[in-house]
Length: 273
Image (cartoon, rainbow, N blue to C red):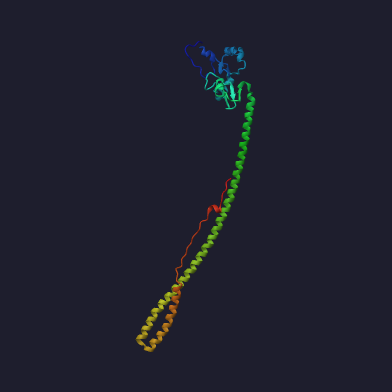
């Protein structure tokens, strides 16, 4: 079958690319990884006749179709020089480079080797060794961190228990303190009520004395009035003495209750190291 016009092959691997570009459609049976071309039976035979192509890696289409898309689409040509393939590996920059890049950007690099001169298996094995080393480090760190978490949980539980014990002790102390305050306030209240009673009794006796003395003035003679007055004067002086004593000691009973908040970081100090 002969095709005319301009055609694009793209990534069609079931058609021979060489024949396709020549205007024919032929089913491919092989794929050359180095040429990045699917080949039909005839082109595959011609491909094998060239000495320069003898070291190319050729796979069956079935094998190549099983490759990961990442492998199939991996570019072997330079992004800066599209016609140049990656022939060198620069270990200084850890990248593949073409011949033109080697003469330009990597001319001062010392760790440059030709890809074909390197043993891929050895380098992959070395890389696997690094991966395994990182895996062991990561797993060891996971164990350390998990152990740390376990320790923190134990410390947290212990701290909660200690804090609860402090809370219980503080509550017990405050309850005793409250009882003491209530008792003291009750005692002061009783004393004040007793003083009120004394004053009220004096007020009541004053009214009674006035009433008695007025009766003596109305119905008694002078001797009786002065006799009673002397007796009442004695009682009055006793009351006056009591009032003066109470007045000299007079003060308003006040109560101030202040809780000084503790400085938290002096009670509990968390240290993270």
